[in-house]
Image (tube, rainbow, N blue to C red):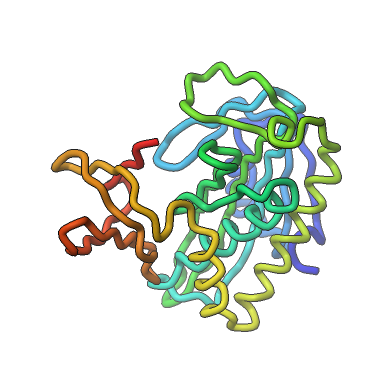
Length: 246
């Protein structure tokens, strides 16, 4: 086991990614070190968004990795890996799990988990990765105004033991990281696409030109999203260049 061989628990932190970054600056810990917390004062999501979490109710985790086998141009592999691990966990509780590009995890049309990947580059490889994960587990009331939050408690109708869920996710992350180490990148890309929310279906989206109907065809190795329009044209989108209309 690499991920989960060392675990640091914090009662309250600004964010687990912030703690992980401080650890990397001070004295880099063992690869696979996991930081968990009961409460985050300043939980962060993608693009500076906040992550709401009631104290003691949800899984808040960051993992420190040193993926020196990954080139900077291929760093989306890390996002695929973490997304698939969280998807694996959620799939054990609901058949409606999906990965909403680039790395939100959905249960049906509702968001159950968010992921924040922060990489550093050393020469021609990745130097370090902090993978932050927020998974809604036992929270049933959300007050932040987020449009579609949901928790494992919602989808299963019961509360869950947080330490057990944390161990399940740690094991899933370790299995998925082993795929990168063994070079099983093509298989990971295939499984990511098979789990992709809305892939191969016509839905409404919007971009800088307005609303349109499109179909997600694939996610490129660099993380760009390929969307086909009704007129047959295909456009590649970077993060935040396209919005899903739910």
